[in-house]
Length: 356
Image (cartoon, rainbow, N blue to C red):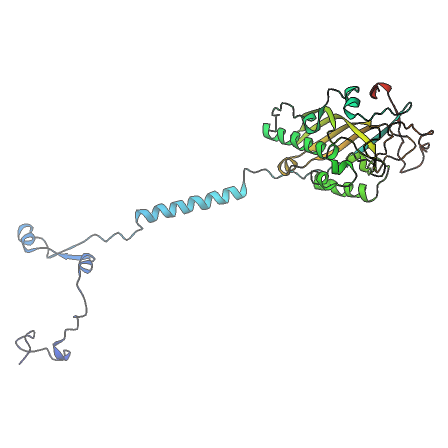
């Protein structure tokens, strides 16, 4: 006998044994039925409309989903934008930076007309000198009111003025610098392209208008003089202006008055005043402003009382209380000799000395 699922007459000849249907592995699930291209009408539909037994279904849409289309569109836009920016970008190619101009320096010693006045009372010296109203230390180097320029903001102008002030304070007021020892505090404020000139000035000082340490900073011969008062008197001005669209310039003009006494004095020695006027010109590009550095391009110094017969290239060698200038000035300059610098010397006006 056949099984319960077999036809009454038994399984067809040649069919697989065991009553297994060759199509039994095919699963007619809902997705299979929905994907069928032909669909049989119901009996009611065939009776009512005399329609064919089957009808053809429209093909399923197998296109991309809406989210996929949006993603493809965004990728295409990004890719196109990248190509456009690569061909025509809004950033300007930076112009080649100009070489930094080397510092041009002039140091003019001022010789006294007679003996250098002095007294043991430092306060009395200041009160009876033109520096009586000068302020002490960094207070004498105030920052002016700053205004933006056509190509530089207020903060950039302030940065230029602040860097110039820091250079002036460190190179003219720092006791470690004044005594001939420290130079790094000044060096770090210079544009890197000027460091070679700066270093050569201290390793091989030369009176050539380019490599004199006293053109970069104020320092006294430590074997001759020392500070009698660390509160140096100062008065001067700072001014900023735009040189061009990429450069700011700062001009500084300050007078410094130092109270000096002989090195190793026991405090009973007379004190004298020494005056230095420094006119400095700085330049700043945008990298300098960002790095708090500057380019010192001009240094014009008048200092005294000094003797014109002594070299003021490496250190200033002040004439102290009671001393007079040595006779004779600097040697003559040969206008046909190459590499020689014109030697200059002036006379220190009596009105610039304290009245004692």
